[in-house]
Image (cartoon, rainbow, N blue to C red; front, side):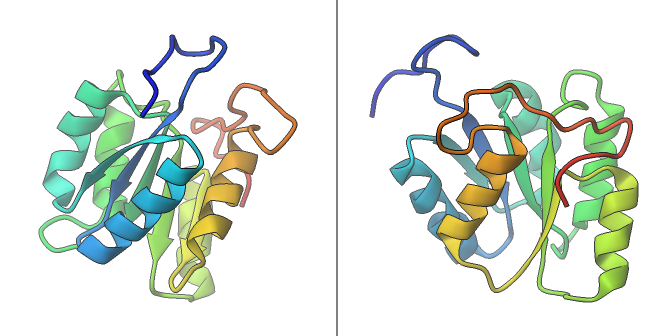
Length: 152
C-alpha cells in the first residue's frame, strides 16, 4: 500500500474510521474503501472510538448506531465534545429504516445517515460525494457539523 502523503497534498490518501460491533460490516466496508485507495481503521468496540479518533485523526468516521455498551448517538455526542475530533464528519449507519432516526441524525449534524443493508461501493461513493471527492473533484470537505448541514 502506498505511503500517506501530507493532508491536502498531491497523492493524499484520506483515512476512514469504521466503528461497528458487527465484524463483517467493518471488514466489508474496509475492503471497499481500501480498493479505492483509502486508509482504513476499523474498531468493533464503541468505547474505543473517541480515543482512537483522537490518535488516528480520520477524515471521516462511519459509526453504527446500535452497539453494546454505548450506542452510536452517545459516541457521536462524545466526539462533538472533544475539540480535537469534533470537526470530523460522521456517517451514521443503522439497521433501523425509520424516518425518526434519519431526522435525529440530521438534527445532530451527521454528514450522512445510511441504513443497512447497503452496497459497500455505494457507501464509498456517498462518502466521496460528502467529502467533495467524487470522481473528477478534489475539493475540501463541505460538511459543517456545528451548523448541522451536509449531504443527507
